Length: 430
Image 1 (cartoon, rainbow, N blue to C red):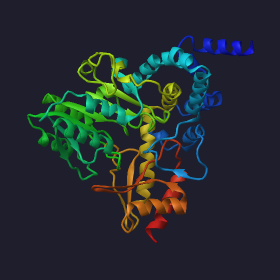
Image 2: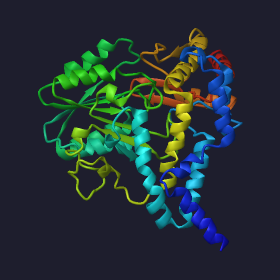
Image 3: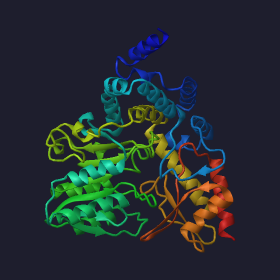
Image 4: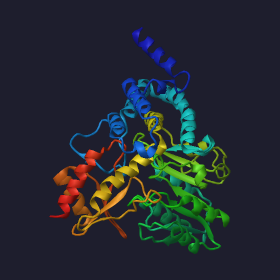
């Protein structure tokens, strides 16, 4: 009888669809974040970026390693405790009777979640598909576009490897033509970048593949003017937003692109293995899904979600990541991340042999920057930071980009970056 009451209680909690999520934001964290926002309500984003008390409260909402400083948030970000708690609760509920609770109850929450993602992204909910990562979202477009032999796609040698490999496979399979641009970043001139794309366009060009934030070193690409250039010539644009979504303050509709893919487990701090695909509504019908759907020519965005069984707990906990992100605010978050980059980079760039391979202008970079020290190769520098200082960062030794990528997050404090600055100072003089 007790078990039966317990079961009925859970069903009633979920009966309205999404009701469980309303109970998941931990009360003490909720109150702390609300007090934090009330206290600093009058601060501009730039003013708030320097207020360590505000960001200490944000840090307190995470459970982080006490032994290692994580400055590789560009790979995958930890999620706050409220997200972890949501995953656990959804998983336990699903596990009680999986085929019923997952498919008949929890799965109904996908539509409210789709709406919240659309609101965050600044687009229509009928243009959003929930995916597992940016690679899945972008490869849905890469392999789903009806391109034919001889059609040209423009991309760069600085794009993400998974996407370059997908295009190379499409080239080998279908005979499309890949035209590779090669940039020498950092670049602080929008026109230089846009003109490079313009010069590569021909009558056979069908699509531009544009990485919004270059993962290797943080260069922000001028997506909107590139899209305008392309659309003026009847060319579509696919944007890789893996490192820009919930990092920079923008909307997808403002970018104007036709297709967009991102990972939610990076800067949004959603569970590992979550992503999002945007397809402009009038483009959905022609795009084939990556995994077979009942009607591959459907105009319904949901045709891209025919994955089969997956973790509904991970998917539904995205909502808590959105709520946490909104407690901070997109503009505030971008200002803080750029402040942290400038904080450490300006303190070390005058040291002998030290270079910053990323612009510090907020128009061209934000929370990702490349550290270079003359006498050390990237791998050796990353090893030194970890072995001697327990600072986790990642070596970037690829094509014409060489250094160690430093990526703080909203939970990173200035006093922690003071330790990074000390470490760089000592390494550069030994």
